Image (tube, rainbow, N blue to C red; front, side):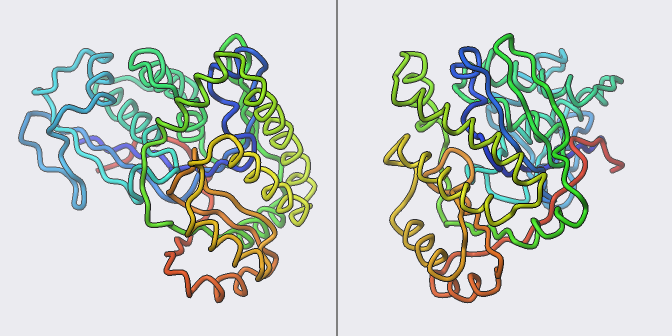
Length: 319
């Protein structure tokens, strides 16, 4: 049996500028952090392999898996593939990118190949965006493959530059301690929101392009503030970013999420946003006194998920 895992991710500034419809025109930039929450994929020989505890064998049609198997020339009946996710799919943490990169690494190892993080990310993007024609961006695949806290520049020629977010250990610790992640209780497909953004960008919709230009500028400002350790200023920028995201679509938020966010702000949260495309998933908050916010949000019924950042990306592991 071969096991591979990829971290889920948090988009920390500039999300949405990684879609080809935007970055091929104007270039994209974002910051993403890998979480200590994972998607794990196992590959066993034969159709009746026993999966690891907690994993579920993938039996039905699965476009991401089927296309990955096709790339490696492996018949679906020749292997048993199972997966496990630490958080539910459709929750805005990039689970499809994490699944695809982990599946690539596992099947590459099964085929006797070793792939670099860039090679894994590029193939994952080719599968999801080019082969399957999904109107998604590239951040999920790159953040999963590379791990850590990193800055991603998406060039119009489709190349991607990956560099670390240069935070001191002290600042990174303070940053991690200031963040809170709450599950909204709603999962959704990002496709509807992203398809609308993609179509409007391709149509040169001025409002959408101006919005994404502003989001890219926020990503660049976020890098400067985080590297300088200016966390309160970054929190204010998160609030502005969330406002811009909601302007892109009236489906980006939900009434109970808006109420929880307002309550968090009234109790010291400096900023926050729904992670990913919006419409459900996880609400990310930043506060100088997070326990004060936690106490206030106990009345909302939202579930907090404690997390840390993970330094590594996609890994092949011992079974």
